[in-house]
Length: 211
Ligand SMILES: [Zn+2]
Image (tube, helix red, strand yellow):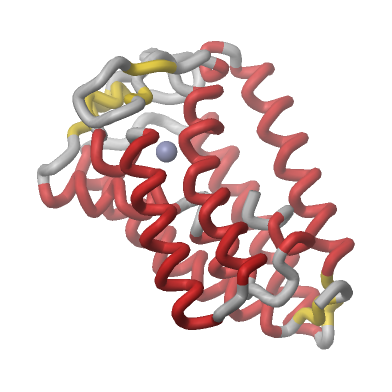
């Protein structure tokens, strides 16, 4: 989503466009550390993920994601006055619910405390990997077709970023379950702190073909 959005909002930094669809998972580790939301490490919960998402009404309900999308979009519009980017941010934040609804078992709430839904794609490892890798490839292709490297950073920092994402994906898919929830939360925080500025860095070194 974050890569594909570049075609729609070429003047937005892809750091912002990537942060929007990840926003639920940027909040989630923080809310875990604060004790506002709960997860249990439970290997086999679905075949793909060792987590039992006990409760995450503030970061992952559809209603709250609409609210976060509006807040994120409002701040972004106030700073940039760029409508295409603002719309991309709003759709990006809310898209997290739709995509998690496809993969998670029925643990995605519509409203805090309300009924929970999910199609459970994660119960099939092959199905998960086919859908996720194809979506990733399509997004990257759209970003590559919308931008061009201005220099070596624009090429190699971007390629290294893609390689890191794939390494993290494979490690998550085939590695052993994490030792504790605190470890999961801090890994999430570290991912955000590293990956968002990195995206800002390579995106600055690429020229928008459509901008
Ligand atoms: Zn999520």
